[in-house]
Length: 366
Image (cartoon, rainbow, N blue to C red):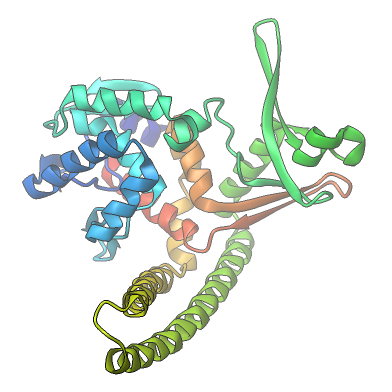
């Protein structure tokens, strides 16, 4: 509602924490951010790690090798959240979060916060500068400076390829489009529907998401699709895990034979140990993914309640946050220009994650 939106805006402009997902380095006490010294030390290490490696992927690999995880917390309903391995998206959210230098953001505005900073502003500024210099590997904001909500998600059905975001300028105005990759490379005659106005298809996708919370039939259909995706993914992961366990058993047997037959320092021993380590690491990753998928299978009532106020909260989000929400929810958008159809495939766990986040924001603002 407009009242909810105004409350969030007023709170952030006063520097208050307005709810949502807690962040690593802080705990929430009486609706305020309080520094968690152990987590804060880890956050500072991660910022320094990025300055050292100058690569998000390298930092993600090191964090996961150390067993570091994202913020773990429990919702008001007693549901455990977070505590997952880092990926480039979660690392990007951390490295660009102004809360770490004692500020709060509302849309494109940044205000002094009530909470204590835990990262040196000079370090934070260096990280932002380095991420901009690194371009594509630096983070989503530099990759998506025009606010293309469907970048990397939109595909041309006729040509079975991606659609790239582009724009033309006339005077001071910019006109944004998504263009079929095949048409760009081989000529527009190669595609029956080579381009579509960006704003038009982005509005369609956003309206479909808004409609999820209003129409019980849409909720059921969307959740059924998400559940099928999750179940298919679980089946694939279990099959991969079974193959790894069998391979691990064989490698252990091979290692036993080699140990009995070969001399110390035989390179085959080291190779077998490497294969065992790689298989065990992948099995651990699969177990984490399976636990996440099992815990995130969506519930119709919870999603309906969480998304009911999506309209008001969407309008409060800055373009960068809106792009994050779309990326969280949507796996792909298929544009069939010949048939005049657009098909949206949702991520299995994204709907519930977003519903929980929106519900928590609503509770905090109430």
